[in-house]
Image (cartoon, rainbow, N blue to C red; front, top):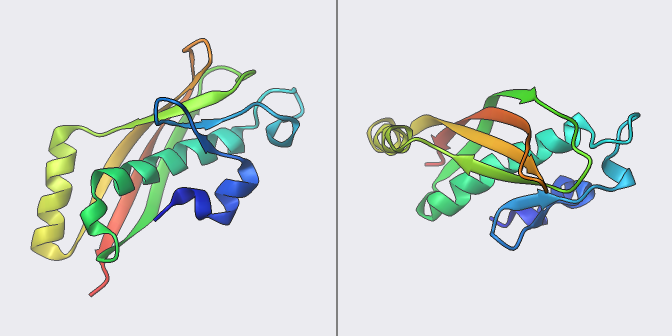
Length: 137
């Protein structure tokens, strides 16, 4: 799946940064009443980055499992006044546990951490995204 084909991703304006991470430019279309980046725009970037991590890490699961976001927790740390990028990560143990669950039960879950940083490298928000994957067959 190409996340850039998702209509909402296109509407918000997410793109790929030079380092391969996902990014969102600061623009009036994603601004809030304080002229900083809207919280929902940053949430969209973070959630999409977590889904992209799944796609890139486990391409062999496409067409075999349906991933669905089950829960998310996000904390906003400072206003974003510039473009922002998202970096997703998972512990090796969580990655191994997901594959074991999928193999054993045909379903599983994984916790993906995401940090959003501005162009100065300061964290504007960080979140944890809980994905559930279910076998299609």
